[in-house]
Amino acid sequence: MSARPPRPRAFRLDDSRVAVDDQPAPMIPEAIVRSQHDPIPSAAPQPIDEAELEIEAAQKSGLIARSGFTFAGLVWTGLGGLLSLGLGLWATDLIEGLFAKAESLGIVGVLFGLVFLAGVIGVAARETIAVARQTRIAEMHMAFAAARAADDRGAARRLVSRLVGLYRNRPETARARAEVEEAARAIIDGRDLIDVAERALLRPLDEKAQAEIAAAARRVSLVTAISPRAILDVVFVAAQIIRLVRRIAEVYGGRPGLLGLVKLARSIGAHIAITGGMAVGDSVLQQLVGHGIASRISARMGEGVLNGMLTTRVGLSALAVCRPMPFSVDKPPGVSDVAPFLFTKGEEKARG
Image (cartoon, rainbow, N blue to C red; front, side, top):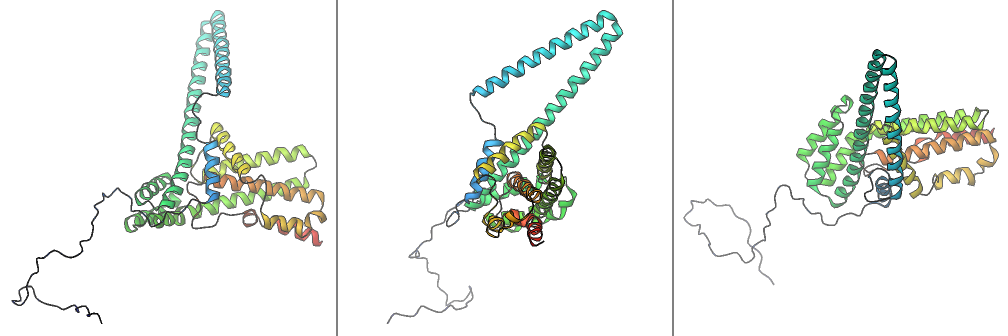
């Protein structure tokens, strides 16, 4: 029978009966000194979700510029140079002709030319800033996914600080920013800090973005159901999708101009292609095909529902690409979550 370990006892340090044992302990624990910037390693890093990898692939293909030599780059560079030279020669001839007729006309032409040049520089600067801002959001999204998977405390703190700074000038996020900053001082675990930031800052923005998607899908389904011409359907759907993509980017902190919108459209198109085309999910297909609703509703009503689904699907892809953080606390929304009225309309029409 093994001897029982001694029970803990209380004593005074100045007690004469207390003897200090200066012999080394049988087992000396190993102490590792880390700097405050080093992350605390987690027991087992979590793998990044497959859906998140698809979003990252779409962002890299559309938002992050490719480096290196390409023939397409040569084509656009040459075309841009020729157009610039042609525009410069035309402006020079025009101003020389104005000076030939009257000096005052030439001066007016030079002033208009300077105004035009200042406008071009301003537009170029705005487009550059917009593209850079959207690229930073895409890089932040990928960094958040990696930091949460590795439970990297240092990276989580830096990224959460950048996320708070992204919404610094939006008064409606003041309470959420204060909550996140307080949590950053109290929470040690990086994954928990990221989850708190998502709940506080991004959940209200998700609701706004989903409301924008639902409103656009409702408009598209209604207008295309009553529109007399197919060309009007195409124009209206395209305009609504462009407006929806721009609005979602603004909700999450992006301000896409023309070039930014083009790059964002490339990311959204890549995301739709990677995630399987315009598929809307098994539950939706079951409602439309398994229940036979699609075969019983009218042709115009069916076109409206399908165009509404198309708009919703594009909006959800824009939400996934523009969001500065992947979904971790909440489940990513689906078509039936954002626009359930598309299916209730079809069911009511089929019953009627």
